[in-house]
Length: 233
Image (cartoon, rainbow, N blue to C red; front, side):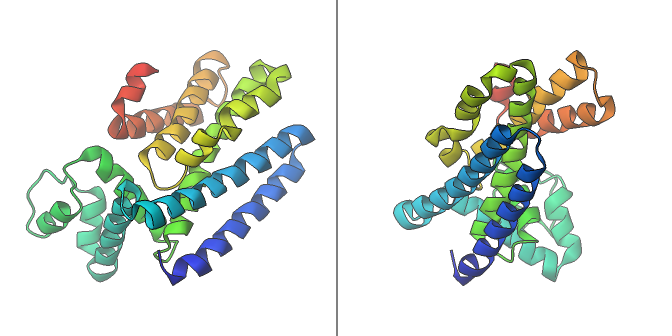
């Protein structure tokens, strides 16, 4: 973590929370709106907690490695655009003299790790090499999927709003370890999208094209990162 985390990180935090307050104020059910804002805040709080634990306690770990490899891809994108695009979209198993050493450095042969690194590289294009800002973006994207699943279950069990909020949004191990640049954060969010999209597509028959696309994307992302989750579902 560097000086950019002290500058860019707080800016992203306040922007995200301001957007969250605006969304909350537009909700008709004020209690659900409160759950939304509290859940969003805890997701961001979890991202800060993960950052502190990995950078200042462990001193290393998966989330740090993902971020460093993502920054490598971005540095190549800015210096050699064609090679950088290959790092994002080319098959790392195909030998290419331009990309071989880079793929080796980011361990692209591990498909699950490589997927996280690519997502972090795309996110970092807007975060100015701030780990904290990237962690916030990952957490928000994950929260979108979780909130979508919460809203779906709330439609089925409208009287269970509070217990559902505690189950999905407020459990410490969920909002803490389910935040930041980590595989669990990504798969948790896309699991929410997968289940809700399946429900809206096959049960409610609502917004068929949108939910079909979201279903396919979530299956692909989860399948690459942690395929056993698909088997469990």
